[in-house]
Length: 153
Image (cartoon, rainbow, N blue to C red; front, side, top):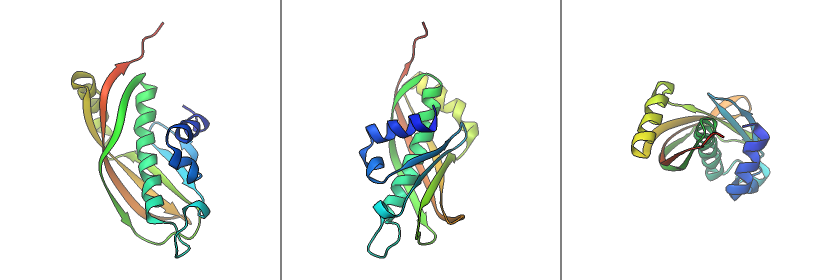
């Protein structure tokens, strides 16, 4: 999946990503990088609204799992079960979120459990960045529900 394909998917299926003007900057097996401008995400203090910072982090984390499942030809419903967001500094301009698996070694077990039981959990983290510095840290537990493997042919 290319950055433009993921961006189109997000804008079509998650309207908040359009309102926030989210752009997909990079899509890799290990990371997804999303970015957004200040203007549609501003609060009364002229900094990024905390909900927008959290939403961008959740979108980046969700996108990483979505990308990995789609790359493996697996269709599953992905939902967030719980999350924690630590805000380290105010953001006064554009910002980004770079997601990664908390423990990449858990991916094979996650996939085996999903295939066997139709349900699996995995923790994804994201660094919220602004002006070249870490502005926040996100950790979320996501659940994949259902397992359908695409048929070749």
